[in-house]
Structure formats: C-alpha cells, structure tokens
Length: 575
Image 1 (spheres, rainbow, N blue to C red):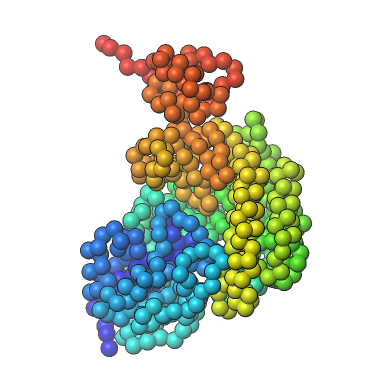
Image 2 (cartoon, rainbow, N blue to C red; image 1 turned 90 degrees about the vertical axis):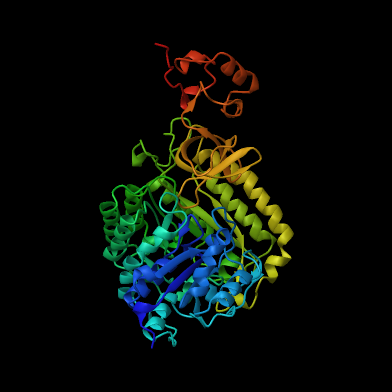
C-alpha cells in the first residue's frame, strides 16, 4: 500500500478543446486544477505535486526528469473540436506515447482524450479510442480516477463520475497549480465550470455524453474564483457549460437569480479582475423564454468586461440538416436570439444600455459588452449544396437588418464514437471539401470583413493587447478573453509586452491597429500611414515637421481624425 504522503506526482497538461471547454494557452482548463485538488484531498502534499504543460516539456527538456521520476504521472488532454492555436500547440499522439514510455512509475491518462484520438486536430476526421500505452485510462472523470487511484495505493479505480461536492472541494484545493503555468500570472485566463452535460442531443456533439445538465451552486464557483484570485489570476472565462442562461435552473429555462448570485459573487471576491467573459449560450433558450433571457443577458452585461461573446450553436440554417441531426434551433429562431442579445447587451462602455445596439460614427470607441457568435458546422447528415446557400442567407440577413456578430466560426465535423455522427463519419465533409472552401471564402469576404468594421470601427480602443509573435514585419497580439480579436501592429515590437491599441483597418478575422495613443513626435512612418486618411505623403510631412506641442498643431485638415488616434508627449526643454 503506497502512502499518499510519500507520493511524488507529475501532472502534464497536453491541452484540451471541447464544445464547452478551452484549455490551450493562454487558457488553463479545469482538468489540471481539479486533478491537483483531488490529489490533495486524497492526502498528497502540495509540495509533492508538479505541473508542466506540453510546451514546457518541449522548451525545457530537463523537465522530462519529473516525468521519469514521478511515482504517478497524470496526462490530461484531448481535442473534440477542430481548431488552430497561437498560444500553444496541443500534444501529438506520439508525444503522449513518449510520456507513457518515459514514466517509470504508474501512468494515468484522462480528459476528453477518452473520446478518441485522431492523427491531427482538424475537421473532417474520424477518431478512435486509444490507450497510447498508459497503465490506466480514465473513462469516467479523470479527477475522480486520480482520487480513487491514490486511495487504492495506485492499484486501480472504478470509472465513475465525480459529484458536485467533490468538484467543489477539488476546484478550490487545486487552484495552486496555476502558479506553475508558464503564462502565470499576467497572460493566463482560467476556465470556469458552472455545469456539465446538455438537455439536447445534437448528432455530432460530445457534451451530451456527460449526461443531463448538472450545476455547481453559485457559492462553489465563487469560492473557486476567490482561490484562483488569491494565486494571482485576474482573467476568467465562464466557458464550461452548454448554456449559460440555463445555469442554476432545470437545465433548459433561464434562472436570472442564479446568474445574479454567480456574477455578483465573482465581482465581490475579485473586484480587480481584468477579464470576465463567457462562452456558450443556447439560442433556443432565448426564444423559448424571452423575458427571463433578456433579464439574464442584462445581468451578464452589467458584470462582464467588454468584448464578450455568447457562442450560438446554430450549426446549420438548413431545415433538412436540422432535422436529421437533432439540431434544436431554426434559422428564424436563431435570428430572433441574435436580435435579443444585440438589444440587451450590444451597448458599449460610456453609453446607456437602452441605446443598444450601437455602431457608426457616434458610437463610443470601445467593443460592445456582449455579442452573439455563430457556430456553423459542415459535414453533417443531410448536407447539400443548398445548405451552404441557406447559411449565407442567414448571415446576410443579420448584417442587412443592422445587427452585430462578434465572430462566425465555420468548422467541419469530427466524428466520435458514442455520437450519432459515428455511423456517417467524415464522409460527407470529405465529399464537400471544395464547396466548403469556396463558401468559407465567401463568408470571410461578404460577412466577416464588413461585420468586423461594424463591431470595431476605426478608432476603437482595445486595452491590454498582449504581443505574441512577429510576421511579415508586423507584431501580432490579442487581448485575453473569449475569441479575442487578432491585432496586427506595424513594425516589430518587443514580444510579451501589453499595450493599448486603436483599430485603424480590418481584415477578415483580424484588425490592424496602432499603439494608443500614438505619439506624433515618435511614431514611425509605417504607423502613421495606416491611420485612416493619412498616406505616405502626409505621413512624411508629419515626420519632417516634428516636433509638435499638440496634435492640432499638425494641421492635417478636417478629413483626418488624428486626435482619435494620437497625442503628443510634452517636449523636454533645455534649462
């Protein structure tokens, strides 16, 4: 019998991405925190628990010693939705096998990897469950397996699901591992779980495999935020749920009182938080219970931070696809939900909520508080050419009738055992690849670009943009939050810095910006020329005539709103 107090444990985070759960940096998922909490609850001292990310192992080979020497290795990972990532690279199957081969002690694998492993994290793929040479694979909740495995003296466990009381303890007790994340403390956003499971059974989705919705009471989530805040976390995303509006209710109808207790409690224990965003909101909830939904959306917009996104799982605007895949919302219903979120939460800081939705020259230059995002999924049963046309019609209607979408997420299905799509697999997605590629380009050109200009017009200020990488002579960065805008800034600035940026132009999925406010006495030609109304010649004149006492001294004429982007630092005068 192995004494828990003598165990050395290494947790390796290979990252997760699920329909209702982010875990690729700058996000940290719930899995490593809950696993660490389960270890502590089972009697393992905190100082004997080591946490590494897969990127950390890649960057610092010496960390592999912790994998080798641990009495217990816990690997956490799995991608059940396709994605492309900037902040980190999810573990590849061969790397996961290497972890198992390197571990001299007992090895346990868990997380959404239990649903299946593919050759790559991409749409139009099929997956299969693999043990990847680990001693144990948690087919239930990995944190429950961790607790039971330690209690058994590393002999084994039953595949079970943890209960609410357990996860409430483990969430707080495991908060300490965030300090070992490479992004801690400034560029780390903690994923928060309010519930698991879903009342609906869409053909492709893994979330129903967790069962019907079960909710964590508001004080337990607030207590977790309090613990994370004590370890330096200032950014939070309430992302781990199928439908934020259904939180604390019967799984379908909204419960505004629970939302008020949740959001109000978070603001009370973390008054200085910098980000509070969410993810999933079910549009059918909004249209089935419009008044309660409006109240809930107002509560969220009152407490969140700007730029928040409520992801709507429309998946398809084609009635045939909706019927064959048990999709629960029609295009008409989804449009109504888009309208309601715009009306209740599409306001910007500095204006009255009743003015929403606002855009154009008179709107304050900040991102709206909360906007819907649309998820569209291709390769589903019943898909045809008309499906693509109906999706485009839906998106054009939203734009033409004066509403805003924060983003449109277009994916191809991944087929997992246990879902209804497992029989069809990726066959339809592969047949329609050319059609999909052409349609995706149409959406980017006809919808994404003009919509982005509506959501973030020139002059919109994006505070705290973290600079992440260089490309083509530009520096790219993002704010922390749900689906943050990718911002390209002229020139190669120091990576790792956090700066405020003013938007000057728009691409399909990204914006161009300049540091805000831009100092006219120090700005580069590249920075000046991207400001609307300023070309090479005017930028040259600005540089030649420097220095300036004020922005108005530059006198560029009425067509250039230079004061919306620039300032002049006080000139130093000789004694």
